[in-house]
Image (cartoon, rainbow, N blue to C red; front, side):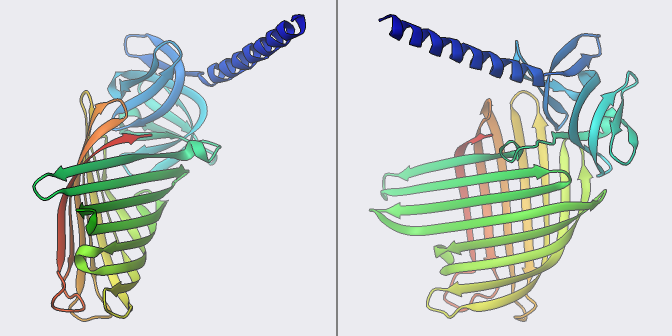
Length: 346
């Protein structure tokens, strides 16, 4: 009996020591200092700053959001990526002086920039899993008259390293009536962007999709191009890209076909940070064919996302796919739709 009691006591002691070491390790990371205009100071950990709002983790209050304009001083010895309104990206450590000038100490030199000219601060993490963020959304709809179910799944994962971004997206939509699939859309995209100048970046994207509405069994596309950042503020982001694309496609009842296209794309995003977060975005890509005279394709998406609880959101999406010259005259040229879903961001 005593042996069992000793064993339980030993396990409890080891568990307490483990919990204490984990707690101390977590607290050791919270060494960043935030100073408000009224002189109040808070010690914690900088999570990120986007859209004029700083996410700051503290032990007693958890993670809080502080407006950029309310901060007079911010200090940390960790490494961050800083994005400016000029489009420039700097990697280094920080020290915000009293005159609201942010000093960034990079490897090559030190920079002094206006604090309000900083649009984004991203921690540079040393572990792969900590470099990931994204969102998952699921939508389900039912029409009783036609016994029709509509289900959708969207997954977005971003991997952030210094001056570079990986983006993986997956979208799937199914429509079933009496247990029979009557419509189906699937798409998978993997993209990589890397800055090579303050407002310029390289872009490489691989894309695969299928669409039963358009009798498209599959299409695999690879694109490469150069992009330009036109606007980047705490409220708006706007950029465009031009390049070349190569595809292989197969329509139902047709042989596979190779395509070579030019590619012109743009995306714009608007952000509202009053209370719960609201994001609006529009993406457009046009691919004029270089191998089939007169043919061109268009992809367009318009979506809005509204947070209703911390990290949970409602999403509304409108999309359009258009092909000016499909293989046969009986095949539809476009597919348009509206989707609603609930999601979680991480």
